[in-house]
Length: 590
Image (tube, rainbow, N blue to C red; front, side):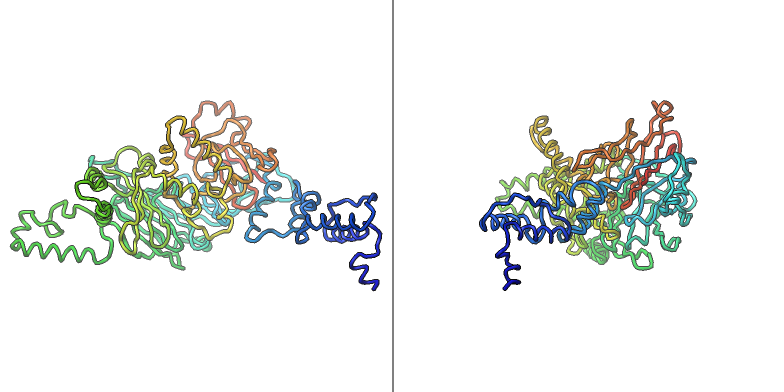
């Protein structure tokens, strides 16, 4: 009976049960409610206090306990909170990334001797750092390995203090150079794909669609063994290598777009690092299309009276020998077929069908469209960006301001949809479902947590401000929709998953540093990184040195920043247009 009273709290003095609960909570991690000596008399006040206590302690998790005992700033408090309170399902990585607000690069030093290589990027898992030689013919692979971790470093240190060379490999042939902004990691980070090309020839005629490279080569590097496992050569072709724009990766499939020949090549990356050709889509959709066209050409030739019709040039096909034997490629024929079929399905009479009228009005423009960029949405669908020919202007401006986009099903060989680049639905999809367009990187789990418009409230707030500004200037959101749609298709592996570039954790000036691996203008001031939760500046990045401020005044150049995907380590390099290699290289570490 006494044990039952003790368990239920009957027959005890007021406040005894509450003190026992607080003591038990204190043994489990602390008690948020302070036991006051002045307690109300009677069992009603005791029951009310117990009810209020358990209201704040649903499931044994006290909100006040989390805030006072294990909340707040400080890495020790966050570690204690991780021990006391378990993270919600599928949010353990987010909880770990939030600790980076207290673990950040707090020290910096300058490279005593500027290395003779260009830093490309860390692999998505952070195991290797890929660099290119100054002549862009050799690849150098390093591993982040900090020496003298316990002792403090001086203001000037050598590169060997932070980086250890793994291997160096000559990958290019004579006359070729590596593209500094092209690199893709495949097969869980074991293989690395690079690209090299010869110097491009200028357009010999206005009718040409794009410049021509004598040779474009894709190299597959085995990072574990330090050897080149395979290479693919494209002769007299043009592939847009800058910022990985000419390729797309989905699982173990690599797609390469040939702008010159208007063909998309599909390769399978096997376990040995070999590129196995699967198929090509462009001039022909299926493998037997060429045989069907040849049979049709022979039947037309026989119906026209043998070889006389072919000699007169009245027969269309390969047997005619005319330079324009095939007026449409496979992609063009499927696109025009989709557009006219969509117009005929409108259901109105031929004289009143506005969609059909619009098709005939823009038929000449549709006929001259060529593929500029593509992305594999999945194993069957391609998102293709089209623009009119002939080639005019720079390559970058041509691809950014492409006028049309379409989704093509590779298996069925038909277009699913086709729309203008200023389409509001496409901008809506990119704004709300950016993560679905971003190619999945299975090398590291942190690559899934890159900030985007669909998962970051701060980036969405910027879109709302831009929408209001565009409405005041242009009176509509068409220009904003065109700007958002211009980001599609997305290039593979062009974002950095470092938590210090996460807009949900840190606030920084995205004009000078961003999650995208591309050169940036040199900031005249230090780039501050402020925490979103507390608003304090935790660390700064300044690519310039204190002595070079006066010397670098008026010198044009750019800066690159290489963040480690997981560790608090950053490399900044400053380049000038007059020099080949970097002028200043700084390391930011903890």
